[in-house]
Amino acid sequence: MKLLLLPLLLSAVTGWASICDSGQRQSPIDITAGATSPRALPPLRFDYRIAPLKLADDGHTMRVRFGQGSVLQIGDQRYTLQQFHFHTPGGDRIAGEDFPMAAHLLHKSQAGQLLALVVLFRVGAENPVLAALLPLIPARADGDHSPASVTVDASRLLPAQRGYYRYPGSLTSPPCTEGVDWIVMKQPLELSAAQLARYRQRFADNARAVQPLHQRVVQESL
Ligand SMILES: [Zn+2]
Image 1 (cartoon, helix red, strand yellow):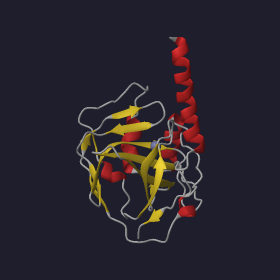
Image 2 (cartoon, protein in one colour):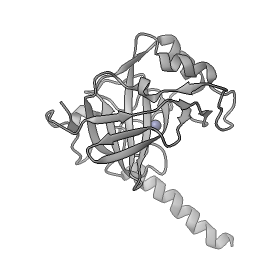
Image 3 (cartoon, helix red, strand yellow):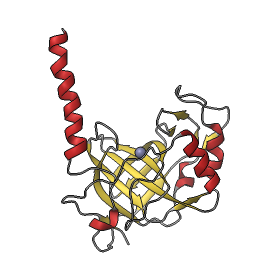
Image 4 (cartoon, rainbow, N blue to C red):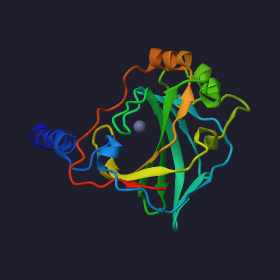
C-alpha cells in the first residue's frame, strides 16, 4: 500500500511545484507592465445582496462566505459571489505601486469558471466594512461564525468608480490552478493605519509575490 501511494504523493507535490513555479499565467502581477490602452469593455453589473455574516479565520486570512444571492454580471456571463478575504500586502501592483492590503472577492459561474475580483487599499480614512468585521474575527481557526442578527453587504467593499483591469491568472496558493479570471478595480479604497496594524497582528504577510507576466496581455477598461 505504501509503495503504491508514495509515487502518487510525490507526483502531486511535484505537480504543484511545477505549476506554481513555472506556470505561465500566475497571479498576482504588476498590472500596468502588460496593459493595453484603455478601451470599452463590458461594464461590471453588481447585484450583491445583504447576507447573514459567516466569518472565519481560515488559518491564513479573515474570510466571509456567501450563499447564492449575490451576482456579478459581465456581458452575458453571471458569476455568483462565493466569499471574500483579505491579503497584506495587496499582491497585485499597478504601475509598480505596492498596496498595503487587498480584498479578493471570489466568484464562480454556473459552468464552474472562477473569477477573482480585487479591490486594493491605500492607508487613509477608516474603512467601515473593516471597522465592522475586525472586532468579530474569531479567536481560533474553527470554521464559520455567525453572530446573531449581524449582516454583511459586499457592495460596500466596491469603489465608486467601476473602471478595471482584466487578465488571465491563477489561484495564489497551491495548487496555483490557472484559468482563473482576474479583475482588478482601478480605484483603490482606504483603510486606517490602525486597521492595517490590527489585521497584521493576526495575519501578517499573507500575500503571494508578484509573478512574471510572460505572454499575457492585460485589458484595461475606460
Ligand atoms: Zn486571495
